[in-house]
Length: 109
Length: 140
Image (tube, rainbow over all chains, first blue to last red; front, side, top):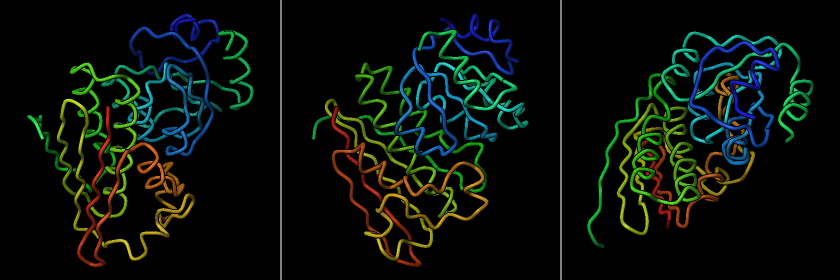
């Protein structure tokens, strides 16, 4: 499923739009070095981490989208960086586990 | 040796908002050159970790990337505090990062191990009080 369709079906907030991408897997984590070395390409990355480095890491790992969980809103720096990069930045209310289940159910990953 | 493309960057150590710019630029260049995606990813990871290290520990520094047809050679040089015990610093999970740095998602002690994991050659030269130079070679 592509990110735009997924965000609409999941009822997520779209903070920044990226390029058209398919969600092919998922990864949950907040420690950026773990994410860099382990997150698969084209994943939905679920995190509660909220700072500017999240956008840089997302482009490095070529994820399909970032999902900020637990009602986290991006700070100004993260939002500006995400908007300047071809990366989707989404917001969800549930915790990481609940939202990961949603990714799995909707995207079949 | 052969011809190479040489890219130079000043890594700004004063804020995190530009951290990752050098590795992102190298990644983009390699993609445009048609380097395979797996190699591009290894380069981006290794270089980003090095860049972040310079921001966290050394108030920035200089990054030079030389791209050859079959490989990339990256030199990361800083005038930071230096590394007293390189073997210890290379251990996965060992970190001297502050609580503030950890709150930014760094300081897992995976930076240098990740750089080693994703490169074909890695050399560290460091003198306490003078600075650190990290050399990375990644074959395509």
